Length: 506
Image 1 (cartoon, rainbow, N blue to C red):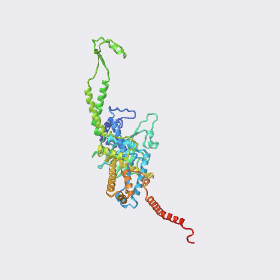
Image 2: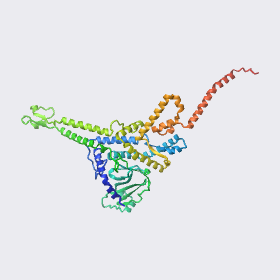
Image 3: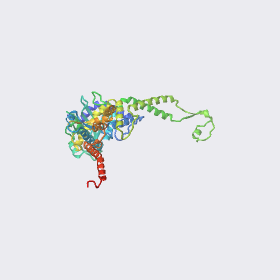
Image 4: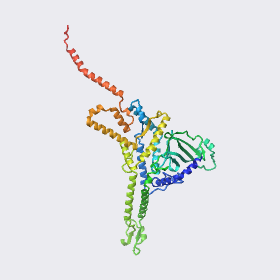
């Protein structure tokens, strides 16, 4: 069997063109996001002549992060499949409430594990490179691997079968037992050099196994037991699916032409401005003016001479400059439109309606990207962290028949449509039947519970009254009505007793 290093080298050939495009995209947006060959922490990448690419990438990534993984709304919820719902004996609303509590607990655990910063980096890598690999440990923040750090293979259905990751580590950071087992030696008399560590991830028959190798040898204790794919925590999402290819295509590469043209134009404008900023004065050689005297003159000095003998050089290229400036402005407007820069409110918390509106605009502008991200990013993350929460005893194990459903991103459009259907139904029914008749026919608690779930409202159980509370309030109301009805009779009897002749009956 080939070593991980040999497999990495063999699979790198198919990745080269994708990697080169990713580096070109990084150079025109955020230099260093996809490092150049040999780049390290001391390397200073060449900056582009424009910042529209960087601004567009950051804006789009922030917008996607707030839409796919909003801070104020859970990005998934749990629901019963059709068969489990048909077999359900308990109250459906009560079950939905309990499932909502499980989802809330899982989301809180994700916040504790600092998942969000890693997701922000994942989205940036997808926009620039179109490919990224992530690992979601049980007790630490996620790991994110760039396109230059991994190679992979996919099956005919787009699922990864092999992922090989290359990292560099200092030998001194390895446990002594590992160094001894692998024959890695530390020489205090020489400078320490980094060594390559390869992580191999294999998916076979719906289960994932991973291990690490150093210098062709398996690291002791690194091999995992086979675990179902949706629980393993390995992600290999793509920005755009390319049929028949192991790698996806990025958003930036689709607009490389405009970005290249804009960068070249801004370079020309910058150079033109640098030349135009030079002030050079020429003096007629037949003039009586002395050049040295002119150069030494202070502001307000008087000199003998003819003003016509002095002239400041100009480029006389204002019309050409205006043309390139207009063309550049047009290209920049197209780039901003491509990255959906306009009309975005940057805030830590946005409303559910804003999320729906952003989702609709993003889906219209990005085509089917949301569908890919929902299946290759959101769904695996939800499944993995539900498994992790159950392993940590924060929630009960998720039984068969209950599955996570993504409710942000593309799904937010469907939820908004369902809310509108409920509103339209209620409005039409009230108009036809009158509010009193509609209130007498509709199951108000179930209607409110359905509406709250579609809006993504958390802790519905604290907002809606239980059946026991409503029954108790109804009994209290009936008792109060009975008391009010009995009050006149009691008062009449009391008045009669007070006015009765004390001698009567004697």
